[in-house]
Length: 97
Image (cartoon, rainbow, N blue to C red; front, side):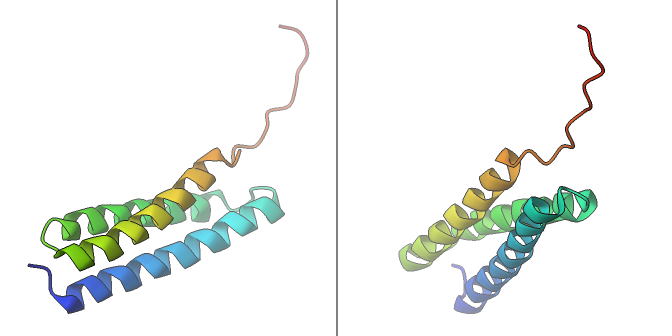
């Protein structure tokens, strides 16, 4: 059984990852993708947080599972937004085919 403390720590870690990733997402939109490394690192933090949630869910009670499920949805939603943002710099057209 997951302890209340372990769930709270996991949720706090997830909130921290969300906050950092949201900052990078906003920055990527504003800065025209100059901080590629930070962006990728933020995506990695989200993935780590999702995996942590999934692992903890295995030993959680129904109420904890519900909390963890909602957090996982938030994490994955931001992951999807970050993936869909065309973060790659557009290549210059050199002409011809």
